[in-house]
Image (cartoon, rainbow, N blue to C red; front, side):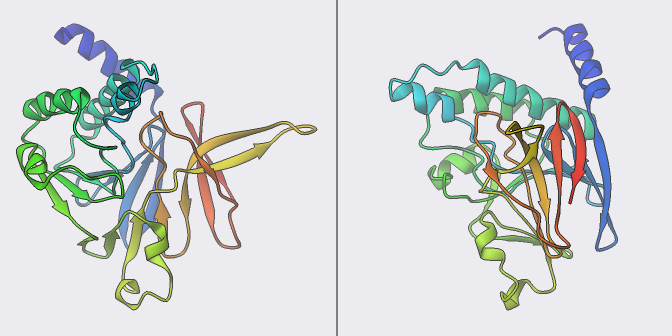
Length: 237
């Protein structure tokens, strides 16, 4: 992409991006309508469930999924990095979908162009690549969790139960379930939108990849969600 086209794309992206400010444990967070969180004090961009290589995995299985879906997710991530200019990228699991394929070769080429940005991955259930592949890609891997200050990052929210003594002092960020919120209209009409889901002790991030489904969540008392609706952020609950 030429520099002028890249600049125009970034300008369009900035104009369409919606942000929601949130303070947790004296830390400033910015929720992005493009399914990420920017942690201001650490200058860290937080994402989950990118599932890079998923469309290539489907094609290898004979399912005709266009590669453009993968490229669009890569372009969205690039736009986030160019907008926030983070000092690190934290991925809360399922950065990749399965074994290596041609799409992951494209990721390596992309990574070589942005090798100056540290990438920290907390492994998810789909992150099954060989350790030497992550090393080649310049990705620092945590097997179970990553703790930074008062925050803990781990993939499965089921591991973040309130009776887990090892996490009581932390606010936990997780992913895995691809949370979505259902908004009901007149009659039986309803729409489901990806969302950030918050409890008193945990945030479940939406899947960054748009080639994913969602699991409906219903905010409990004192819980709340931020739905991503038409490139805007709507607080629910």
